[in-house]
Amino acid sequence: MFGGAHENERRAGTENLAAIAGLAYALGKFTQTPIFQKPAILEGIHSLRKVLDSIEGVETLSPLQACLCNTLAFTVAGCDSISLLAGLDLEGICASSGSACSVGSLEPSHVVTAMGRSLEQANALVRFSLGRENVRSDLDMLSSKLPGILRRCSIVKKGPNKLGITL
Image (cartoon, rainbow, N blue to C red; front, side):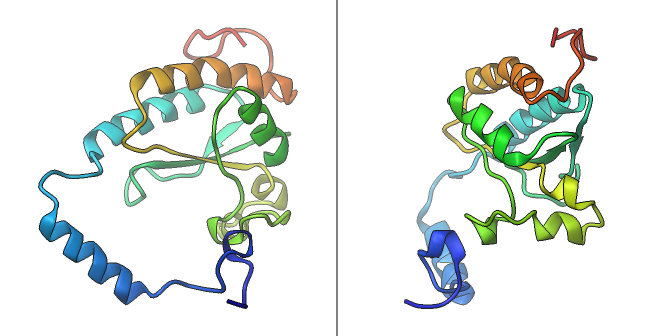
């Protein structure tokens, strides 16, 4: 297939939304229990948001309402997403940056700039997505390692943050 550069040039364009919706409906008719446990995911996202909101220089972009329940997007002042992703990866933490439809692009997120944010903020976007496989210990590990990762990106002052975690 030829076309756009979606998903590292693995597909040429937008998927067939009608077929996707039809498949989702059909699967829903045959699935006994919810595959995606929204309350558990929301609990993890709210816990992670609390940690992020306690760190100076971090701005959460995901709204509290009317958003994907498993995704949390944020920016980090004075740091770029490539450095942050590298730091997270070294600690075994998976995350994303930029716009999901522009994977592999080195350009700042056009979604963040469309929200009225600066190019610097758009270039500092990181996204965490939780799934049914994530457990409390995953979030605890992320919460304990995140301040150190941000410190290595030289954006966080040393000392205890609002949650009492020493940076």
